[in-house]
Amino acid sequence: MLAGCAAAGVAAASCSATGSLPRSDAGGARTRAVHLVARAWHTDVDLPADRLPPALLPLAQDFPGATHFLFGFGERAYWTKPEPSSTDALAALIPGPGVILVTALRAPPPAAFPPKDVVVLPVAEEGLDRLGAFLKAELREDGEFRRMADGPYPGSRFYATSRRYSAAYTCNTWVADALHVAGTGVAPAGILFAGQLMRRARAAADAAGRQPALARTPLAPAHRAVP
Image (cartoon, rainbow, N blue to C red; front, side, top):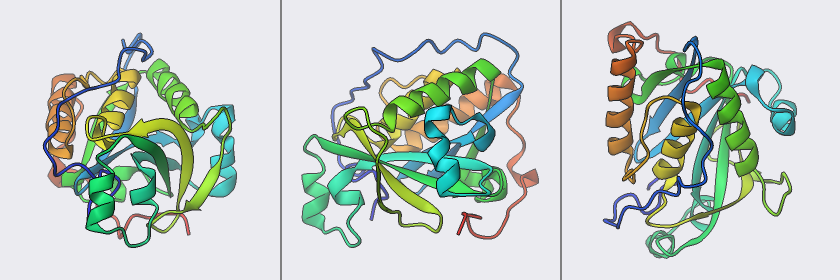
């Protein structure tokens, strides 16, 4: 089944909620990186643990020893069910509450996932600050930081969000917005599916001249998630 992007296999009109996003210009030398990770039809974006804003430091307390955190968005009722049905997947097409899955890693994503599933995107320090601010705002429901159920992977957990999921605003749209905020050069308009986002991100990485050859990217066992 689809991981968090319940509507990814269904055609829908494209709509990206980017109108209120922060500025995304790099504003400095791109000396850091964020990572786009594909998990089948779903995508995640990472933030280094040393760049968590103060409001998200509870994540470091929830997962001691983590060096990176992956963030993904999905439909709440569908994604948090241990065994969602096809009826649940169809219901997820209707706009409804979203949820954010956080997965803690003890290694950078290129060392934890197959090379084909990771895109390295250079950003400025200011871009990490903007990404952290975006994630801080998204991991809130009614102004509160709220833990929910354990996630489907070792070292993962669901957290509440006020963001609503729909067939026109999927997990991949949300990640595209996050990458745009960070100043990666990835344009979010029209993104619904993981393949679209991965292709656009690879093009942005190639344009920046910082995407390493996939064959030279180390591969580590499993996801190195924090137990």
